[in-house]
Length: 183
Length: 183
Image 1 (cartoon, helix red, strand yellow):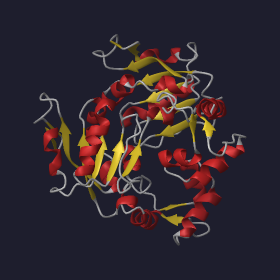
Image 2 (cartoon, chains in turn orange, purple; image 1 turned 135 degrees about the horizontal axis):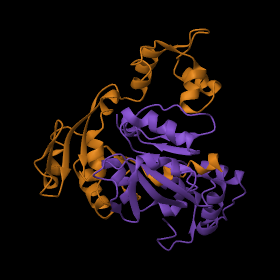
Image 3 (tube, one colour; image 1 turned 60 degrees about the horizontal axis):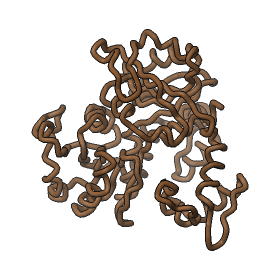
Image 4 (spheres, helix red, strand yellow; image 1 turned 30 degrees about the vertical axis):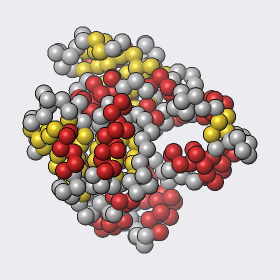
């Protein structure tokens, strides 16, 4: 974001302000992987960004499938920010005949019965935006196709084998972080 | 969630498994606010849940406004989980004449020009689901109406005074947490 604004350097205290921590924590964390800012000019944004991408392994590029194209899934498809993190949303699946075959942007919605094609297509990450009632069943199918990571928007605890990483986004929990600060 | 499943107790290691940390960390963190599990039976779920609600100040109840009823906003309106955390989504605003006046569930969509009624209605928390291009302007208006906390779904860094707490949800950043674990 800062690079896009034409900035080349940033201080630890400016980073701390943006993400809501303190400069000391930023310097300590970055020092673990050998990134050192210079007094007066701070960190080189381009270099720092590349180092972080490498550590998080988002520099390799990952193909992503979206499962479920309701309101939330449509919002995910319209979202432009994935490329910044090396993600390429290449396919979407749904079970609704009215949605199947439609093209939204670059992505065509396919029948969810074709979900086992993920392995052949080398897709290892899925975004799950199906109703809660279908979430565990779809997850089991995803696991069988060899998916490695799932970003889950269903507000429920899904069971997966240890080899699969799942991150659940519950907007009520995110919202619940606010009252502590606002009283 | 566990209480709804009829469970009354949970061990620190079972909590750790669910949220992806270790039992020692759970015990250490809970001990800060005086919650102690019993060997063999663990924590009392009801008591623990009430203690956490009190600490996070989500036990008082907060009225919430939704700004923007596109795909993402519609998904937020359809979401049933807010009451679990003491939130009551009481109103939604949009600028699209086709949406204004519609009732979705219990909530009627009002004209965004009425947004300055938030103060009178005692609404201190807002969920922002407007296009990125409108996000800063709407945020400035929200700040003027006395909003205290904003959950922002626009993928951009919004400027607010220190007295307002903002939490930004960028789904690409959440997705970017996966590759580290999946290689």
